[in-house]
Structure formats: C-alpha cells, structure tokens
Image (cartoon, rainbow over all chains, first blue to last red; front, side):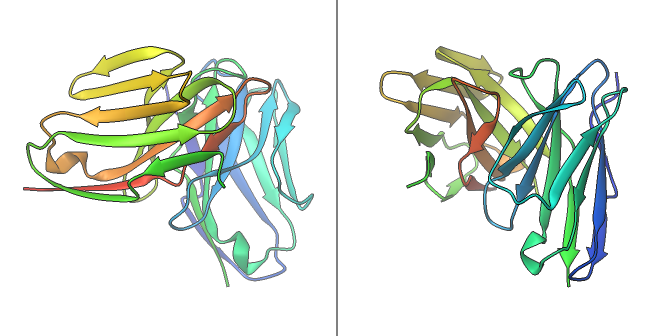
Length: 112
Length: 109
C-alpha cells in the first residue's frame, strides 16, 4: 500500500505566475483535502474533493482551484500568485469524507 | 479568537520528563485529531478520537467533550519526540479540519 505523495517537493515562482501542485492519494482513498500552512502557523483548509466533486471550501479566493481525477489523484492550481501564497501546501487523503486523514510530505512554494 | 487554541506554544523538556500539551476548542465537533509535524513539513496522524482516551506506546490522548478540551501526554520523553504537535478538529457538519497553531516541543538529552 503506497502512502500519499506530492510533487514537486519544492517550487520557486514569481508574482503573477501560475502553479499546479499534484497529489496522489493513498490506495483506495476517494477523498483528498488540501491545506495551506504558512510559516509558524497551523494548516488552513483550502478545499476538499470527494469522488471528483468539490466537497467543501475554506476561505480562499477563486484563484485557488482544484481537480480530482477518476483515479482520485488531485491537483491544486493557484493563479496570479502573490507573495503571501508562499507556504507549505499539504494534501491529505481519506477513505471517507469524514475519515482519518493521511498527509503527504507537502510542497514548499516560494513566491518571489 | 481562534476556534482551536493550543497551549503552550513552545515547550522545552529534559529527556525522561512527562509532557502535556493542551487543546481547547469552541465549536461542536465530531472528532479531534492529534498530529505530529517534523522539520521539513511531513505530518503524521497520531490519534483521532471523539470520546474518552486512547494510548499508543508512550503517547496518550484524552478528550472531554463537555469541557471542549483535549490533552496529549508523552511519557518518558525522548529527543526524537521533538516536533510540532498540532490539534485539529472536525466539525459536526462537513469534513473540513480546523487546526490549532501547534506546540513546538523540544526534548533535550
């Protein structure tokens, strides 16, 4: 059984650019949640996908968007990057929408 | 005021000490998670609980639903326990997690 993986591990972008982060969920898990963790803070919920549909969204602007694919892997897209988007982006998969979540190692994004 | 508050923010202990990290929340919940985050960012789920107490090795987690409070205890602490410990709650509707800001634990040899 493979765990949750994320790619890339690190990324540097400039303001105004767009970025796509990827997450492969644990085998058999149909739910993926994305979180943003700024330095020194706890993670903040961005959104969750369940069976390819958005299943809840946190307080993030529309330039944060996502997708979930039929194999339950997921993407997080951020358009028009801002300096404050610099953070660790975590995804977590679960067997059920409200089940125990298994976290990936994160993607560290730096926006210059 | 955050929905999830942890204390202390930082904790330094000597190897072998008994450690307690506290979490208070202000909303109704269906479950509470204790998570461990090491430098570099990876998060490991330690416990998910909705009542009572759970134990795994040297770790014990308790929750008091009436008081909206949970504690994570580490017995016989070891330098490898040094990490950030995060409390997160899942509300009664929906499945999103709301996180505390974490407790940075440093255990010195």
